[in-house]
Length: 166
Image 1 (tube, one colour):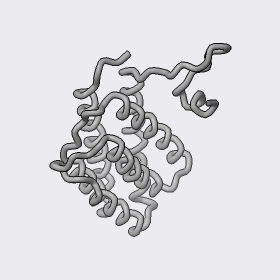
Image 2: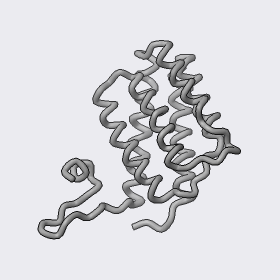
Image 3: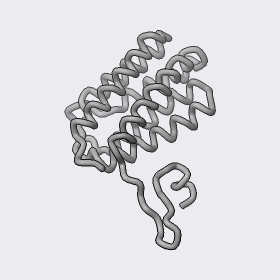
């Protein structure tokens, strides 16, 4: 339970148990803001430090996303999405950035699992492939623009599908 408290998911209530901290609009907004900041930095660093092989592996992951016409469960999408985005972060070769991004991605996965059960994943495959190709081209400006646009679009879809929240 201590790790969940440290990560901010639980609050200890002495002699009463634990309280699961609710997902709020503020926590969603802040998580998306931090994700955009960290991933913009990650694509820039990855372009400068990653090997061609690492960037090709990221493109291979992008190709695994389902087509827009295929039904995808949030949990399956989350897993592939986390692997893809964390592969970009790992390609930056910065352990502090990796640790921070893992926390943000875990928090966003929690938000999606709780509040976006009907979320549709339109054009996700195309978006991920474009990001991966820009990385392979080692185009920092294009990569940063694509990752920012991708996160903003995803955030907009989450907000459009959110249920009433605390």
